[in-house]
Image 1 (cartoon, rainbow, N blue to C red):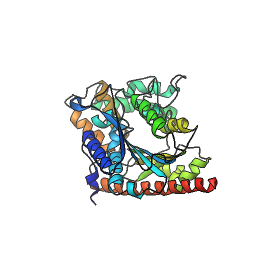
Image 2: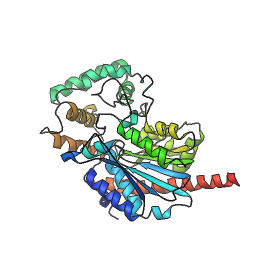
Image 3: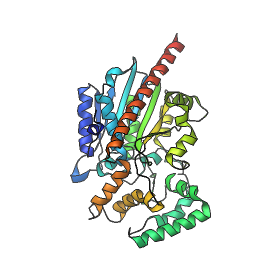
Image 4: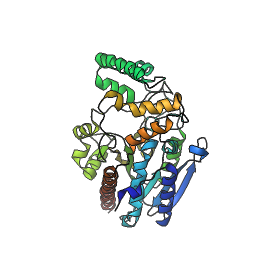
Amino acid sequence: MDASLFFSETYETARSRFLEAAARAEARIVSYENPSARGPHGTPLYLDTAWFGPADAETVLLNTSGTHGAEGFAGSAAQLAWIETCGPRDLPPRTAVLLVHAVNPFGFAWGLRGTENNVDLNRNFLDHAAPHPDNPLYDELHKFLCPKRLDDAAMSKMLAAGARFVEKHGQWALEDAISRGQYTHPDGYHYGGLEPEWSNLTLRRIAETELAQARRVAFVDWHSGPAGDGELIYLCFSNPRGAEFARAAHWWGEDALDPATVNAMWGSKRPSRRGIMFWGLEEQLAPHARLTGAVVEFRSARHKPSPAKTIRASLLERWLRFEGGLDAPEAKGFLEEIRDDYAPRRQSWHDNVIRNALACYRETIVGMADWERERARAAD
């Protein structure tokens, strides 16, 4: 099997292949068009779902891709591989799979991580009627993290300011302030937004309608980015002392969820988070269903030799959005750089992504079957 055959060059191709494969497998397909955003050349953008298995299944795998748009290439390829390698035919009794393709179709189509409003969806799932979380150190960083130009002089100035910040607050404080989520600078990094994004509202609608009968929801949210070559990092956001975390560890291995393993694979201590999709769905489903799962990262980027290289993909996205524009002469080259971080074209990465994704699907579905049997025994 040539793993590269499951990867697509564009969002449009990935979507078409997903829908065709799902239709051949006799899935129930629903498509949601984004009413306020378009892709390159004015193409419409869709979030698509495919349901496999009995409609009344109470044990369901919810599997999402493209939450961070440019990361959707790997997640889409994984979903396509599962469909086309007979995954739907091998489902245990009384279980179902709901694949959600391109949660953030704008980012997927343009090769950017955020939504059409520069919102990081994994910072957007919180109560926007309540005061938004503070991130005071980000305010200190924003002014020098957003240069008008990306030339050597601007980079040297930014790095000098960053070094002063690290000297004052420490390296982890820098990483945490940038990535935890902020709600004060719409043109900044990991902006969580001041209201639910279209993708947020649409996914909540899907959970409300498609998962109304569910009592046990397994959750795998495909992502990519950390340095490596297709290895999986399991980020479980359940209570570490709770039953859901223990169940996830049983499915995927205690070592895989161990913070020491995660930090080593991530490359540093994991920053904190606000408004992640995992917690939003967990809260929404809580009245009738328990959720066990993880954000699962395919390691993808090359190891970076300097702080400037480490942050470059984020710098490029912000510059394209707010300084140069997606039609700038530099745009094509910059978008290729971003893609090489999140969806490299090297064969070894393709091979490892598909092999590891299919293994994760198998382990998760075996775990779901055990979960369903636990329910049956308890009912007897």
